[in-house]
Structure formats: structure tokens, C-alpha cells
Length: 343
Image (cartoon, rainbow, N blue to C red; front, side, top):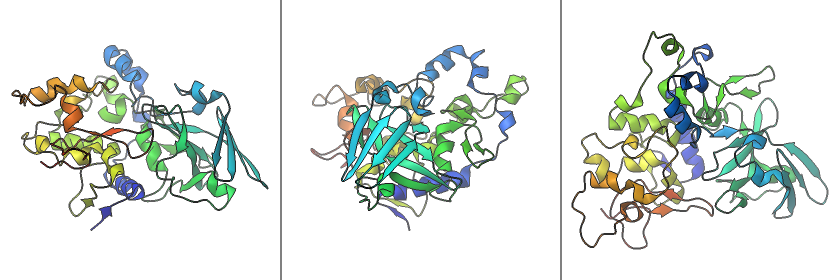
């Protein structure tokens, strides 16, 4: 029985699930988000400003590119780094390595992690990630405990291009839209950057020709929708899988935690990701904005309760400096406890 106790365990679980559930699709059947904008302009404009839409970009075209366009001098033990725009130099007493930075993963609402292609078989996830909350760089999640012995190891973690459970192809598939294919030298070439319209609504070619309706995740039941969003945000735990709820990194897997909450279990199939989140809009970060969602079911708030539901019943967890995730195991938490509710 797998026990997810580390970030690497969580990644393997997610990629294996994604590989097993992914359905084949033809690149030619995808039209791109701009084709949708002609008829669905309000949704397109809202979505264009969301973290989903900007989940992957080239570093010098990222919306936060100005934060690293000026040279930044960084250190990791005895190793020195200089990051600027889309390149990084690493050196120690005997060696110098110059690396291009090809991809920026993440919109920057929480973090931006940099990735480079090494050769046909390998990609590098750089050690330094940018954290907007710190306006600075820190260890990429999952890398802080690694002690490098060479300058090559100090630059970051190597991932196979394709490898069941750990291949970086799975990361590209969740940060882009449409089938990911390979160039003539086995370089990964995304169909469309970011999580755009067809990532959730399916290929649009038939709909563009007025021959078929698009898929609409809102029609799914709450459990099915949470599985659907869990394709990239991690699905609720499969039978035979246990989650270590004392491990703070797991809090970022929202469907996993929502599936455990009494609000979900007692909602008779009504509570899903879309109950609180507008799939087309940027994430609402003002926790008070969710009070109306809570009061739709909990219309008799005890006098002793705070007027802000989320701060008490979905506490924010920081597994590392610069990151904060709301715990989606909605419940009653004891003072000083943020990982698992008492009821």
C-alpha cells in the first residue's frame, strides 16, 4: 500500500495516474484559444488573466520577467550562480557552466521554476525557483534537502524526458494544452502554452464547424469533477493509497484534501471545485470573498465564530518560505494545528 510521505512520492503518484487516465488526441483537432475568443470573448478575456493561462512560458516572455531581467547573484554552498533573463552561469573554484533557461513553469502567483533541455534524454529542473512573496530566489520544491557533490549536481535535478512516474513530459502535459509532441531532435514542443480552453473543454475543431458541442466539466458530478481537476492538481486518493496528512507538502493537492472534508462528504454530491472557484477567472485571493459560498449551506453562524470562514476552517499552510496553500480539508481545527482538523 503506497504511503505518500515526500514530494517525490506525490509526483510519482500523480504522473502515474495521469498516464493511466490520459486519452489520446490528435493535434490537428485542436484550434487554440484564439479561435474560441470570437464567440466567447468574456470568458476568453477573464481566462487570459488567470494563472492557468500563464502556467508555462519562455522566461523572457513571462509576465514577471522584469523580476529576473537584471542580474541576480546567488549561492548554494560553495557554488556561485548568476541568473539573468534566460540564462544562468554557475561556477566554483575550478569550473564554469553556462546554461540557457528555456522554460518558466508557473504563473508566478506562488512560484516560477525554470527548466532547460540538456540533450535528447534529459531535462534539467534548475535549483533556484523565483518566489514572488519573497521577491527573491530559493530552493525549488523538493530540492532543498539534496547535498550536491559537484557543480553539475548543484545546478538542479535531472529528469528523463520520458519515464513512467518521473518523466518531465508529464509536467509539460499539465502546463500546456493539446498533445505534446517532439521535434526532430526529441525536443519537447508544446501545442499551446498554458492551460487554455481546450484543456478542459476538449478539442474544438468539430465545435468550430458547428457539428458538435464542447465538453463542459460543469455537467460532471462533484466527485467526477474533482477527479477531473485532479488530473493536474492530484486526484483524491485511489483505493489502497494512503496519504500522509502530517506531511505539509501534501496540502497543495487540493482535491485530495477536499475529498476528506465533511463539507464534501455531506454535500450529497454538490460540493466541487467549481462551487467556490470560477474556472475562467483568476483565483480570488481575498478569503472573505468565499464567505457567501459557505453561508449558502451554513446559514446559522455561531456568535463566537469569526466573520471570515476560510481563515479558521481552511488554514493556510507554508511548507517552505514563499509558499502558502489553503488546506482544503474544510473542518474545525484546534489552536496551532493546520494540517488535520479535529472534526
